[in-house]
Image 1 (spheres, rainbow, N blue to C red):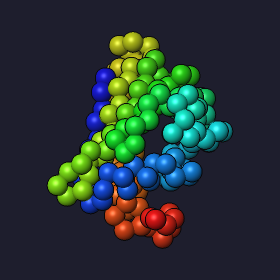
Image 2: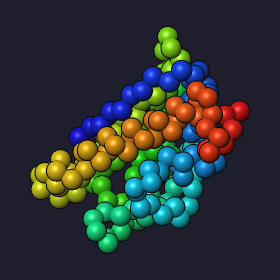
Image 3: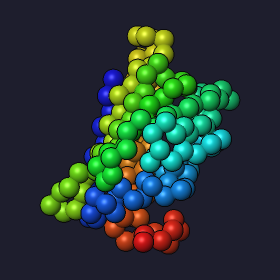
Image 4: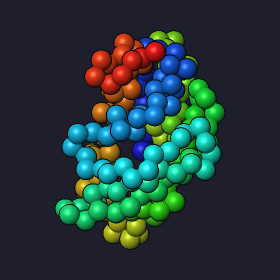
Length: 157
């Protein structure tokens, strides 16, 4: 399965990419409705660096998720893959491309749910809208920081 979210941001690719290099970027990108516990952060610039967190799967069920950074090419792309967690497969590419208005931020996620066809049906019913809503939030946080700086989320410089 594949999910793509793209947004035009009125800032240079360097500026958009710089947001993701902030030490607390991941925390800023967690929507308020998500229940995610960060156990260990990762440096996106260090290939092999791992982020570890616990996510709520369904109701009280939580699962450990380990994401390893596998690609870093500023200001164009960084990538992480799940090495442990709820998905059979998860690869997340964060792309920043030049655009006439500034940049295009594009998140491309390739994923396979567990449990085969049953997992695909469950994901389509329970997860697809949540993924869109989450990435709408994440792109808006990035856009605010890159375009004008959000006083509640740190200096844009």
